[in-house]
Length: 104
Image 1 (cartoon, helix red, strand yellow):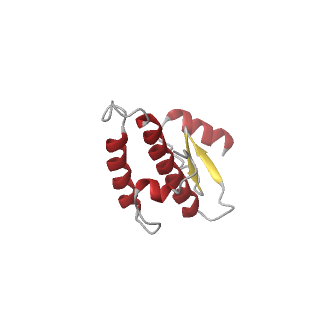
Image 2 (cartoon, rainbow, N blue to C red):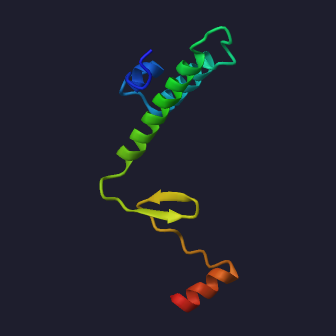
Image 3 (cartoon, one colour):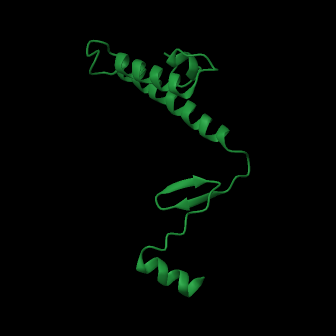
């Protein structure tokens, strides 16, 4: 098995024009079918399962990157990154109100 070199659409069994919901559905189906616990007799089940996971992650990242134009700034919002948006100013907590008062 050529792990990591197959087309992610082929690994999941969908076309390149498939919707995000179709890709997710195909991933769940393939993950269930290739999970090592589902096929304990198959020695390469772990590799096949990893290949399915890698294919899904590639497609998720590719769609996330395609969703935003090049040069869109990534603004940190807590532990998550929100692309192209500034964090909302929530003045409900005393600490935030104090910071807004001191630093504008």
